[in-house]
Image (cartoon, rainbow, N blue to C red; front, side, top):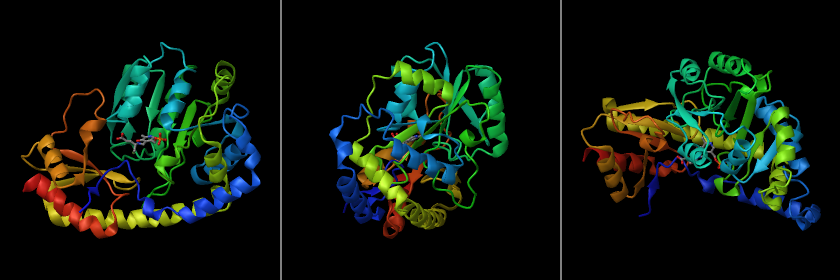
Length: 366
Ligand SMILES: Cc1ncc(COP(=O)(O)O)c(CN[C@H](CF)CCC(=O)O)c1O
């Protein structure tokens, strides 16, 4: 028997409409072959018509307000963050949510960026803690805080925007990844769409909505940073594959994207509901579940004598892919009082929900 996966890093590729993607790729190759004869130096931010399509998509789905000129494509969030880091003066402090996204935290450290971490409260990043630390740039995941799943309410979004407006060199990096998947709650407009002070740098990706392997992500810069990028980084070439760019545009413009997201939302919601029900039956009062109204994972905390490492080892023996919250602890050396795991359900076929819960039970209690 193969492995079962609670990984929050993978999605169920069996549900991806490969035949539609191939149709779009075929169209792209037929109609826009000329685009491939270039080394991407001609459109360092990404092909203009692709950025137009993305700008239109984001205005409809996320309330983003931007011109295509403000969008920069990149093959992954990390490459875009490196470019952004090069736009901000080197002594400016960045602050990340704790727990948060360790790949961004470690990248910034490698770039010698001074980084602090900021605690969360029930509404997301704590404004009081931000004021105490007094950074210039805060990196937040308001749609579905990574990894706790907190959805930042509108009141906190307004407070954050007001904080940024108080000084000229303050910015908010809004990482809106996996914002496509909302259940029960209606989508709250993103910070970028509410930002009248031009302080929000919006990060997005197609890794969750389409396939992580496509490596197409984007950032939207406010005008003042865009001007710096165009001079300081005029030598940089676009890192996204041209064929993937024009296929993506075809896929969105022909309506396949909307259709795919709609069906994935229903599939993931059903799967999430069934998984949570199965876990409550299996674990009863021993389990506490957090952050379940959005995204492709939630947190589960267990009442158990067994240590986190012991559980992770037993899960591996049971061929169950499982990650703990510890991987998202950046600086704070608090350890969650009870073993807490990131339970991803995007790559857990409906038929294997009961078995995966059974294996998890064995890893924790047997
Ligand atoms: C907070 C956050 N912002 C963006 C991405 C997307 O990055 P990219 O595909 O490069 O566009 C991820 C994706 N996170 C990975 C899978 F979920 C890794 C998680 C882990 O390392 O725990 C993420 O968590």
